[in-house]
Length: 290
Image 1 (cartoon, rainbow, N blue to C red):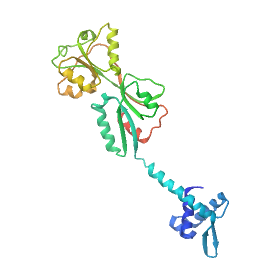
Image 2: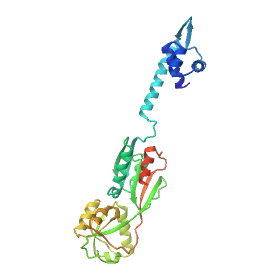
Image 3: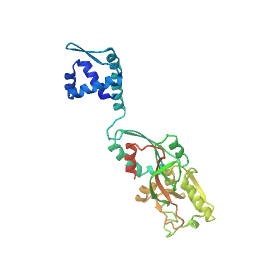
């Protein structure tokens, strides 16, 4: 039994005529006859009865018509609620590192919304230590993060790009014109750092410890804007992703130190949970990010 057979049955019940029903449905009469015969064989009863030139619906046929209407209505509702078109639609619950939202991601998001207006994106900022659980619980569908390389057996890394971190000062800072700056040059210098939950802050502290240097921390904040403003005001050296300071470098409000010390490998990475199905909407967003 299928919905095509049920649709044919209802049309015959409505018109009381096999030939007319076949014409209205665009079928040959033999096709309509075969469909009804298959239904009757499956159900084990007659659905129509001929009385002279009249065609009537049997009692069993009357019962079937009630359920046939319900089944076809359910099919219409499914097609309405779950579009079968190739155009992406639905909701994406997306977690993003704040640093990626200064210059890069807003442009990606704007392009995506222009191309796929039927997709709603629920955006929230994330911490590197909590987003794996959020993906596992389904709180997030997709994560776009800036961190040291993350390896987690529960996650699938869809994309990664190497990024860079830098030390930033006001152009008038004593270190601004130094040809090479290393860890030793920063000993005793006020540092402007991100908060304790930030992974690349810990990278810097570990590096200082390796060189036997005790950092002089002037400021700890989760706001990159505050870091930049303190650096512009010559209150210290800000350590942050290069992508965050693009505008200030162009406007010559900040200068990136000529760093010659140890490197700080960091990557923008895209993750989903290992069991997550990639919808068309998510696939298209990943394509733009990549």
